[in-house]
Length: 550
Image 1 (spheres, one colour):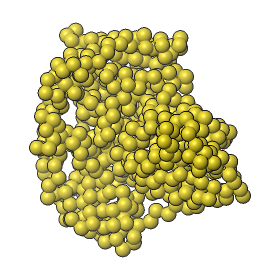
Image 2 (cartoon, one colour; image 1 turned 90 degrees about the vertical axis):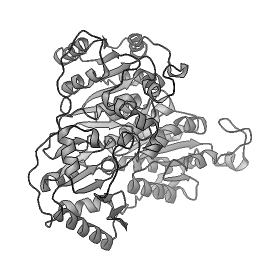
Image 3 (cartoon, one colour; image 1 turned 120 degrees about the horizontal axis):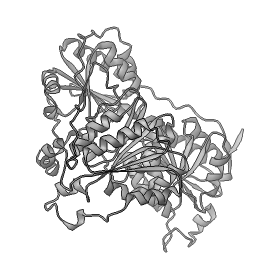
Image 4 (spheres, one colour; image 1 turned 120 degrees about the vertical axis):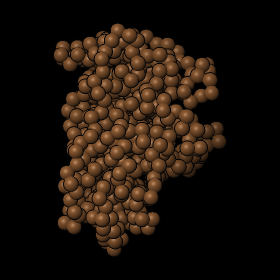
């Protein structure tokens, strides 16, 4: 059967489970939006700006597997590109779709709006080619084959892709057959890699799995949890991979802080004789300033489509195939039953003294419930949140590698739209929050009722500790009255604001939210000193500041 290009493109989205498409309208993308809206399986979500739309699609994809954002040509797509670049940095599969002028105008190099005064209709596709794994500019001749090619890469590599769709090509009829994407490892390489991994596991006494974000992107959480339980292998997670492992499992020893971990963690980590790295990234912030350093115990590394075992690279070995072989192996010797050592934060004595950053997270940890979605902003919050113990079946997302401040607020909106069955918890700083706070309007519009924690430390504290002079003027920000912000974006819809200056007040606010069952957005603004930072971050700030020397 024949189908319009725009309808075929939307059908490809729904095949991947994308039921919500984020973006903004523009006069070159109306046909695409019409296709999204009239399609029974998709909803169109107007965001407040294109950057927020890209961030929302990123948060959505981290929970649901894939995300999509649509903007208009030039001005819209350049506004969104930072969000797509962040998704590319962290292997988040978001498709960026751009509506562009009709073919005749492109051929004539017509001087029309949203272009340069010396027109270049392909300039923005060239820019996006640097932050996507595949890109395409559709024509009447290539629309079907290029859509299929781009989606093939999208599905295989789980990275952002880009499609530019001219107005008139939208309505062109193409074949509606969706080709199968085949992701299959080289059988010889797969067997050789898995056999050697099994040998190493069986000869080791104290193996330790270090897992990370790629296991999330390839949707292997269930398999990973089943693997560590079946064979009783201890497991830790890098910061970017937090939430992969059910944290009540006896095999889970906590986030990988290496020598900065507690005594129980350090003992297990130091006694491990074999490290298995599952989808890991040893970047500066993911290792707390390269505190975690691979040594000669790090003999196994599993990445998206290759494995490294004892220095030998096995190409065309896909992560999902290798996990399937290992999980279903009868040759792996089960290890002695481990004991759970991860307890997260211990309780604290609250007081009427000014609250410290380290007082916040034990109390928030106790506030968490099963089936929460926890979204964490970059900065001083992320290192501390990583040590909170999550309850069963929780989602946890943060942006550690790209670290674009402001990401968390719209990403939280997207994450909720991806899974509306879970309570949403957002932890952000007031500096980050100001960049993208407009998306609070959509929280109200779509009935999202999160608990939002805003850490107000009078500026960019993370930058203060990294800069030569903490009092540099550029680390200050404009002061806002955040209680009034709720009135502005809520337009009369119910919300509850809490001002917190002491740990007693935070404990009371959390108790009220828990016991009074507020059926509304709850906003907890916590005031700390501008130079107050968590102990864990204080220990490694010089290492982060001077990462090249670590």
